[in-house]
Length: 430
Image (cartoon, rainbow, N blue to C red; front, side, top):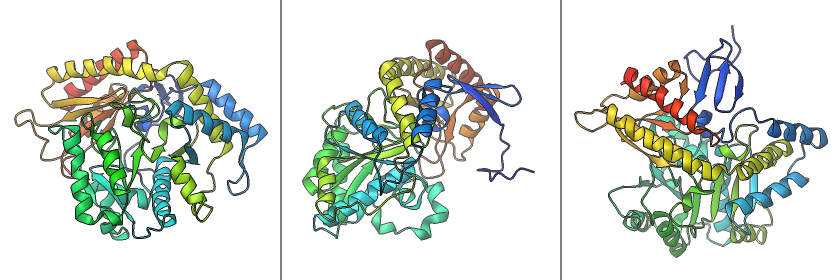
């Protein structure tokens, strides 16, 4: 009998090794990692450079507590990360995962307004659907019904107003104006922040607003004194073909807080964090003098060393440009599959964050009962391809989709193989 508390009752294969875009199990089967785990393994598996950097750091300095020390590796990483993201003057708050990072951003937004003398600002507006993490604050911010339902009594509903998801039929500016209407409805003086995923991940595969949306959102937030938080945990660090997905259409868009995770250390160690503007940092430090928040493993030197090595690989191998090129190849192939499989209603996305939308070909609408995504994902696994299935994008229940996001290091030939295996899975699963 295993002593592992598994995530569900399903049977799990045991992974024993991985290299590049492939994972091997203990039965000798090989899987093409078409979703980078959960959109994490951005530089691919088995990078000895990263493992060596971690080992050297562990031998030199494995742990210090953030209330007592900084470290050379953290100082170097924060500086290089700010440069990569083109966020001069921003400060990096390091944590261990995306949920912790979003919790930190929410609490930082709240404290910022308290320090400014506006303690009535406590609400955080997010969108529905959305997913910002599994911890209670991040989950309360999320608009993902199935994951929230059992914990709803632990959340304060009035603190988390929800904006509708991006509407492709609207211009970016008109779409963003819906934020102004919601602010006026709930009282802008009570709102601390607006938080969104620039390109939606798990809750509504690769949905993104039209050009102009994020620039107009930023302007509305400034007008009302609301902080703009870009949750780039999944979409950032080059995955969408730009260092920050919020700048895909306008490189001048600059959120007050940028939340990062997943691709920071690319699965080699737990690492996430928040990039905070100089104005936010100075307001907190010139007020009470400390961010009233913290985690034991924040800024862990070994995790940060992994992140520094991953950042080196991303730059040296030009993986942001690779995400653009291989993403275009994959999206073109997905459109060809859409033409062959009527149950594929749409394909969309940016770079190597792509979504396959499934539904009833007779109506062009989601299936009344979810399950298509899980069936296709199971068929894909049997064909040696790992995907990220989901449902509930329409109303919390209906709306099947697959999220695809292989490592940014994937080769053209591996993209072709991925499409061949997905073609087989769609034929069997739909």
